[in-house]
Image (tube, rainbow, N blue to C red; front, side, top):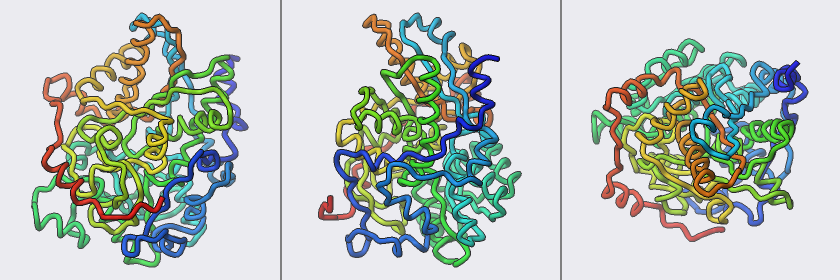
Length: 456
């Protein structure tokens, strides 16, 4: 039997612990601050939104956190996910590079997001929670939480960014199939949403606005908690099953990545593939060149300011230090809806400031060109978000060709594009414009950052 097949059938290969990068950081992460007092928040401040087990994971500095048995039981349905070598793509590019990709599109929801959705649903169910509220951009996270909610008997309400709600009806239908209620955001169901609609009735929405609506709903009901699909430490923690599996699979291939590439919106799939390798490096292991790739129309890492900011537009969340475009910033409606967030995960932002990772931004026509090239070589149609990682990996492979360096490149193909074919239709029809953000709006959003004396 082929080794890769045996690996997939061996459930003992599913990691038993999540890896916590905070245990190995050379400098501690700046604290999360209360928006009123600007003092570090405590567990009680977060209790209205999250169950205590997730709050403890958020602040933990333990290197390994055990994955509960019921969570691993669900993971068994699709984990471990396959690692492929893109030999046909290598041939097309005429590169000496060895290109590998970890494929997370085999999960029931079609992306990496169930890795944390299942964990969050489990901990909420164990805490007696009945309902979860959340936001979603492209719908990958919303459909994943809907899937997890169905498994654990939780009601789920998803506020979906209006432009994606209109662009991606099949994602909306998938959420409803799993039993969730999907609401376009901004909506009339919350005070936050009504305030935005009062200013602009046809507002396209943003993840910041949708977060405000979901947080508001959770804060109003004792039986409801909030679930987030990216950005926070515990979410990134849950995704590290990806990188841990990749390390074992790369060892089977007798190889080790010189370069790791991941797309970044909030930072979760990037953290999933990169953090275990970075942790090994920080503990004295081999150095890896880690590249975060983001959309040029929402460039938090390459254009944002490293500062304390709200995670939502309505200013209902605590303040975190991150690369931000400003909580009131509304990105244009490009198709990679999962990457349309004004801020970057504090942990990923911290790594950028420590010069442990580098960042690159691409326009959407270039990433779709890369995605089509990948699909024609490897047969998998990537999600628009994943196309950014594909583009980054292709550029690294071309650089290897130009420099004559046979390096190993690993990237995370975080989801398939089967529910995003309208984006490809637009691309082939010449309708996929390279949308630019409004410089004046960005300047205004950055000017409105909260005035916080650095607590780091």
